[in-house]
Length: 381
Ligand code: AMP
Ligand code: MG
Image (cartoon, rainbow, N blue to C red; front, side, top):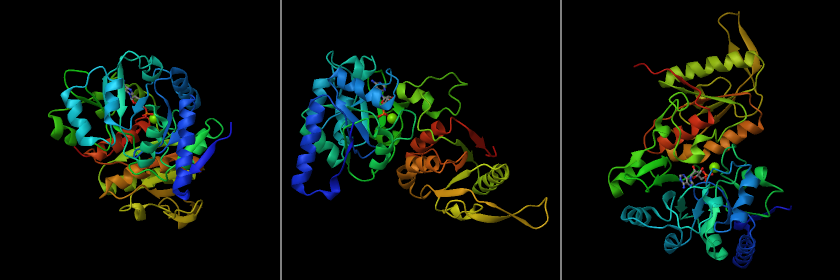
């Protein structure tokens, strides 16, 4: 299958309209279209067509019990999909839609099991990205879409990432440029007694509580050792090892100096063993790592207390993930950087950690999953 990669920003108004019409036609005929949202790129199909939804699972290699989020372009569409819409949902929709919040409600019977992974509930979101909204509207359907990556790989934040994973598997990619937020939507479940966050995202617990009162959080999100503690995430997708780079990623937390020293010593050890090593630093700290030249394979001098003088070795590949003062910059680069380390074929990646407040909570949740919960804690308590 030929994958038609359409760079929307290069088109004039008439050409855009034509591209969106074509995308809408593919959806109505039961095909797949990748499209930009403000969180990550989605892989869309007609949500009420079980055969079309099945194609998403096939293209991604996604386990069939992992449900999809239904994307809408107009609030009224919620009432066609959800059996009931409680007052809390109405408030959240008004406050945060269009935007990066997914709401779980009881589904209407005709929403196919193939879309909800067999669950009696359905996940719904109205994205704010103009291309997403125009595309959904043009299709005349509601669109089931997970992230447009191969299952298990980091979510795509640029059309290039989608192309990497989906070339030859889908007929069309709508390219709207790099996304704004860079991590998936916050998911809140409104089907229980108390609202519960099943996946942290840009819309924080504090923002949600301010709108609707106390909001719980799925224990799997805050756990550092969910497997050991036998905690199974309530959002089916959260139980899979996810977002993972090919190299072994380890997070290091503690004071800035302790983290720097630990990462530098791990880097040195692995480089001396002949491995290719990456470091995820921040704008504030990147200067403090050995060989922090972003050019690949730079040779640098490393003094070794056990030897006389200095030794010359290949440096680690250091990348800044953004600024600690602006966590939104960290969220926006996270998946792109994990993919960059993949393409550079790093064997080991060492990363700084982030405070778990607000957006930091969502960032750490994704990083811990990407690291398979490998965390070295240097905190003094
Ligand atoms: P993705 O957009 O790739 O992150 O996939 C959507 C995610 O939404 C799934 O992996 C689930 O974790 C979550 N989700 C979708 N539908 C439901 C539902 N009915 N109940 C709980 N979680 C859901
Ligand atoms: Mg995903």
